[in-house]
Picture 1: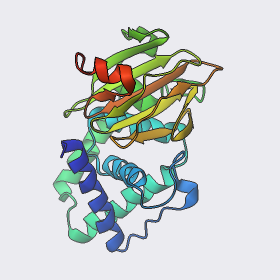
Picture 2: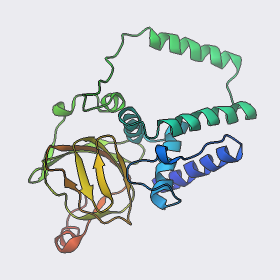
Picture 3: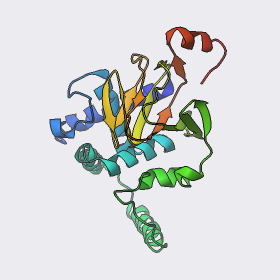
Picture 4: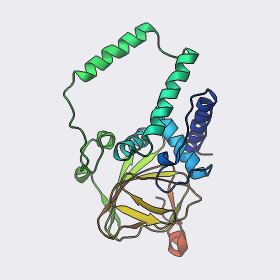
Length: 252
């Protein structure tokens, strides 16, 4: 089983440990994400695992930036992540896992040095790229190098860190992505516009978690360009009659 999925199982286990410790973390309907239904489905478990990984600080740099950007754009999962972080802190305190006094003093000194640095311009509601993602990219979206993959579809591939890769997609209004499935897991954040596929309709701030069980054809909304940031731990797998033929010669 791929490393990313093993990590997700580990994150889910941490959630269960925290719940068992009496932290009182609950998933309410108002804290759900996008089109994922509040149940024990694999998609919902994967999303909870990713959010738990963010709270634990164990995600790859690209996925950490993706989740941070989602939390800045959308309020849907902020309370859940805050509850995770608070409860994990309580568990650490109860187990005596906190640093010694000297470590705390060194941490405070580092924080003082950070706060003394020049301020960074905060994200505004109209900014396409949220702060965590801007920090990861290191430059504006328009300054990145994109390559055309199909008419109306461009991509910029990035190193996601820790055996993952990240891709920025810019898709013209109404354009279709090729029909595809996934050899592993793909986590996508919508930054601008939106798209529809077999799982539903996703707009700015929504996260989509896809794996080998989802075979879909994402279609950008007709009214504006769709920009998405995706993190993958394995290549996409083109499907359909032409896709299966192309897969023999090209790996994405």
